[in-house]
Structures are given as structure tokens and as C-alpha cells.
Length: 215
Image 1 (cartoon, one colour):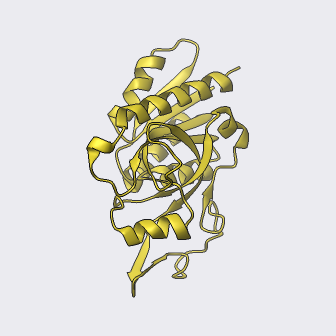
Image 2 (cartoon, one colour):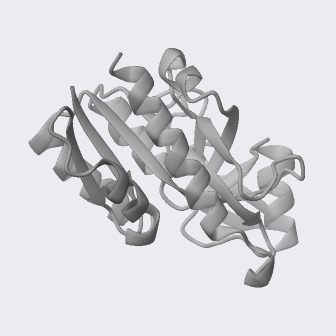
């Protein structure tokens, strides 16, 4: 089994590198994609064309819209949406699907959502399954935060997840996205954040998934 583990930054990936590499029993490669949808999408596509992995895993931190998701814990992402691709007009945000610029059911989208269909893989993490939004601009505006939480119905925010889902769906690669919750979305006081705890939780979840998948 060829396993590709990706993260946006070195800090999110290094604990896994220390725990899993080198590994004579498993064929594991790791990739730091860079931050944001464009960088992560391009980096991941190049790597997947070269490696043709049997399993791709995205790990990293994320912010939470849901007070019930405790900072420091990890979750697994079911559905992804692109949050800020569209227009702000007359006090409301309209995405490209509502604008009629793209078909919300054009593969790999389903009603504008990028869904992970690999239930067995997701369940192997033993983590709570949640929905996410991906943005290129970290959310601080209360109106936009309410839009993501209340209208899109998502629980977490990251800057790479949708690109990861889209590339893996397009290339028919089984995949799982695991996120450690580091903070509440909108809270920029990093003394409140639990970055190391979030990375620790997501790292352990990835190791659990790999051990379950190779049995």
C-alpha cells in the first residue's frame, strides 16, 4: 500500500515524520503542500500523478465554529465546501453556484459540496465526523462567520481541505482528512489556542488510521 500523508506546514507534519519514518514495512511518502487552496491543490496534484497513492491522508489544524468541538481534539471531515469563491453583494455572500457560474452537480461536486465517500476509512479513525469550509482568507468578520456556520452548516474551517477533497475525488484516490481543533474561528488571541494539542491529536489519529488500514 502506497500511503501519502500531506499537511500545509512543516509543523503539522513533522511529528508524523518522526513517528513513522523511516519505515521498512510501509511505503509512506510525505508532502508539505504550502498554505491555501491554490498551493495545496497544485502540490497535491503533482505528487499524486507521480506516486499514484493507494491512500491519501491530509492532517493539520483547523478552527471551529462549534462550541461543542473542544480545542485540542481531532475530527474527521465528511463534506467540504469552498467558502469565499463568489461575491459579496448587498450585504450577502453569493457563491459561484448561486451566481450561475458553475454547476453545483458537476463532478466531483454534489449540490456544491465535495463529499468523502469512503465511510469505512473515516470510521477507522474513531473520530467525530463533521463538515468543513475551506477559505483563502481566515474568517474574522462576524457576518461571514455566521454565514459559514448557519447557512452552510459547517463545523470547522481550514485553508486546504476542499482542494484535497477535489484532487482525490478527481483522481479516484481513497482519502481521509483529519483535523485537530486549535481554536474557535474568529478568536485571534493565540494565547487561547491549543496548537500543539491539536497537532498531537491529529497525529495520533493518523497513526491509528494507518494501523487499522494495513491489517
